Amino acid sequence: MGILSKCSLVAFELLNEMFAAVGAGFLGVLYLVKKGFNKYDSIRTLTILVVTTASVAYITHKNNKQIKPNKKKVICITGCDSGLGFSLAQHSVDMGFTVIAGFLSLDSKGCKEIRQKYGKNIIQIQLDVTDSSSVKAAVQTIEHFLTRNSGYALHAIINNAGVMVFGEFEWSTERLIQQQIDVNLMGTLKFTNAFCPLIRQHRGRIVTITSHCSQSVLPGLSVYGATKTALSGFCDGLRVEMNKYGVDVIQFIPGSFTLQSNIMARQLQNVQEMHDNFSPEQHAFYSDYFKRYNIYLSFITPPPMPFKIEDEGYAFFIYHQLYSTEMGIGQLTNLHTKQKEKTKQKTSFLL
Image 1: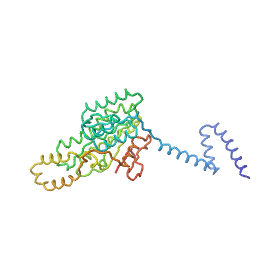
Image 2 (image 1 turned 90 degrees about the horizontal axis):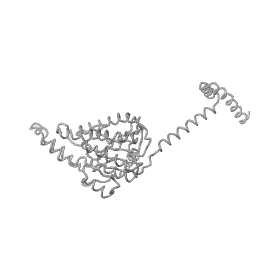
Image 3 (image 1 turned 30 degrees about the horizontal axis):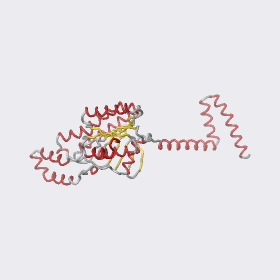
Image 4 (image 1 turned 90 degrees about the vertical axis):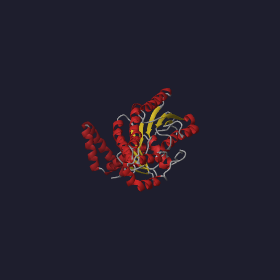
């Protein structure tokens, strides 16, 4: 029997059984598929090809789906006086977003430089995440901005503000402990809570910058690591809560950026405060060790002026956290090597 005859026979039998299957409903269709799989190699091959092609096409479309940055998408960032926030504000506006940058002080070096370089292209607001009235004012500012500018939407808030005190836990004063909790943890919770209604209404996203210390806390950073670990847990819970409203919750885990920010700008004053609050027994016990410990840390000095971080991994972070609409639940990215692997949460690493 020739190839054409075989194909005609297969087509005839398929049509014949299809009519019977349709008449029998869903169970009839299942029966037809099962029989075809058992009897014809060509049907098995064709089915596998169709399913494979459709899967590849779907995955490719999903991974390539992006948000096009434009000025109608508004991003609000905390802690823009230096470091990651200072750089992120500039990168984001360069890419086309409207940026509202929060500064602890509008007279800070970072704010003055951004004002000089970008003028009104980056909207500068005074923002202290530990102050409820300051946070409320930020919400009102953005609400008024969105009302005045029809078609604009709040695309993302980025929780970046943070402080870090280096020193063993026993040396820490209550004020130094409370300061890290207030800024890193409570400040982030307060700011996020205040913006939840707006983010939900605009189906935006919440990005929280934690730390590699949330994965493995370094000695000397027990309090700082505790606050960042708490934020990691907060992101995990909030992600599930907000998912049903179309809001993405993303955790960004950077490595060490102490030399690019002012996060340790008050380390010398903090060391003096620790030393001044030692008991006589602690002075005697820690004397030489405390001195050597802080001589070592004295080499970690903040930059005299904040600067824009020009880093390949940092740009990769911006691309994925602000552009992608289908980041894939649990994308774990080592940004310097550009290696990607799946995890169970939306997380990005910059090591």
